[in-house]
Image 1 (cartoon, rainbow, N blue to C red):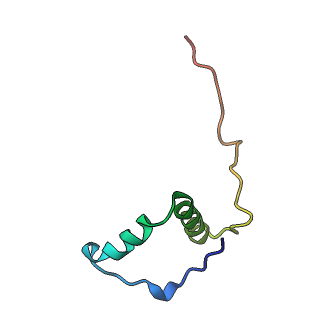
Image 2: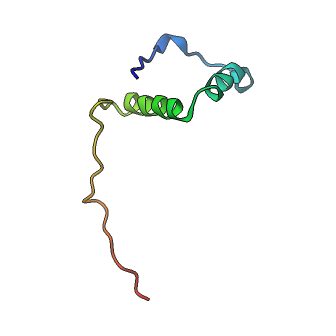
Amino acid sequence: MRYKLDRTAFSMHALEDNKPSIEYWKDKTLSERLAASFYLNSVAFNFDIENPPRMDRTVFSMRKHKE
C-alpha cells in the first residue's frame, strides 16, 4: 500500500474540531493504522519506506544479573 502525503490538506484548528479525523481512523483496521503511522515516520525521519534503517545493535549490551 503506497501513501502520498498531501501537505496542503492540513491546517491548525482546535482539538474539539478534530471529531471527523478521529472517526475516520476508528473505521480503519489495526494494520491500516500501523501502515499509515509507519509511512508518517518515514516522512518525519526521512528514510525510504522500502528500505528502513536497521537498528545499531552495537549500542546495546547484554549481561547477566548477579543473584
